[in-house]
Length: 299
Image (cartoon, rainbow, N blue to C red):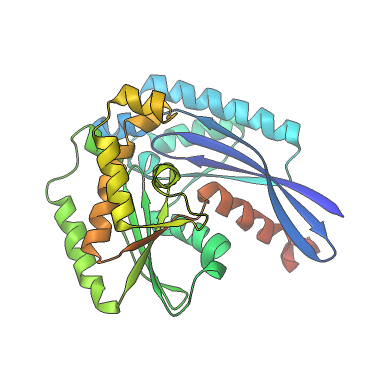
């Protein structure tokens, strides 16, 4: 038996996460087991989506977090790691400069990935084997932006990023007509047939937790609408106290539910699947595939 440890860093608009996972190799099989997850509530999107700049305060917090993450990875003796940043870092004018500084001071290389790359990381490494190749699935990730990818027959047929996200709704900075763009796009893809949604992100996982008692990780449109209505009638403080939400979850969960409900309505989808995965999980699988590839073994 052999145990390998990998690390994944997911730099989102609402938080930054470091995931450690063990991969256990035994009798020709590989088993993935999460070791620990560290979540730091650094909300880059609050700066980027308003000013297109990451503020000096957030830069310092991010640098401190990356230095700490580097030390933790050294202590854990990881085989390899990957750090990925999404919409908030993509849209920041000073994003690349900060990435260069982090590489120099924390020795962590950060890759800025597109919405399509994000979907591919999760789909190809985590959920492709769970889905029916005869069905059409719309992968939807709601965060700093809304990423939509259509999978049909087990392959990607369409991918698009929209400038609509939870923090942008909170800050009232969603570009005019952006929801119309989403609606028109989804109406166009209805022609491919019945669609089921695959929801990604911390918000949809939290919504599912309170909307459904079933073991299967899916819910229908009416279940999501009911939990949206329930939360919409509660105060920010009530969501934290009664539903055990962190402050940086309680203020974005209703905008997230609104986006998911709109997408389900416009695409005529009644079912949303919520696999308990994220970018970090996909990165771990990706790292292990690279590690165990014939070329890597030869090196």
